[in-house]
Image 1 (cartoon, rainbow, N blue to C red):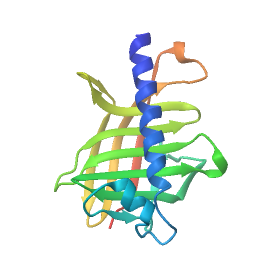
Image 2: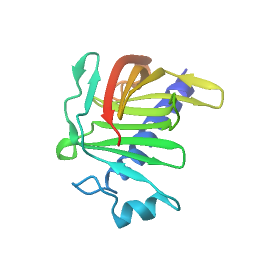
Image 3: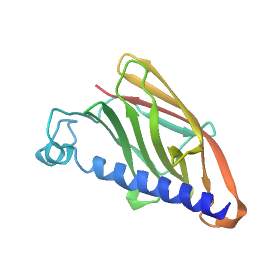
Image 4: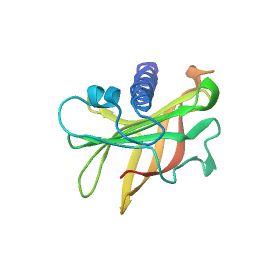
Length: 169
């Protein structure tokens, strides 16, 4: 059980860290910057930071998350969504999903009140669940993320329901 908790914590924190790097690759106008183009590698990419975004956990807005920093990057068949915390706090969001007619979440990481939560499937081990609905350029991702309470990792796994709405143009 402890090994499973450690894997979830590692996956969740890693996802959030990588996703937060994506946030640093955009400007306030939602256009690709030289840094984002270089970070994205070869090929075209679309960076979007505008639109109406929501991140809810257990039906409540995720306090401490800067919704204005939500960034969506489409490139090479993937959609990456990330956001930064307000004032250097601990809250965070990172999502990687396929860019197809019916997108699938490949990984999702949330930091909620100091707890690293994730949706992933690694090494045959599935953590949490997620579904994606698309309406034009709005993606709604719902499901349950699992992880550990970082203040008390030995307490066992915790599960929280989430809903993320993001505009990716």
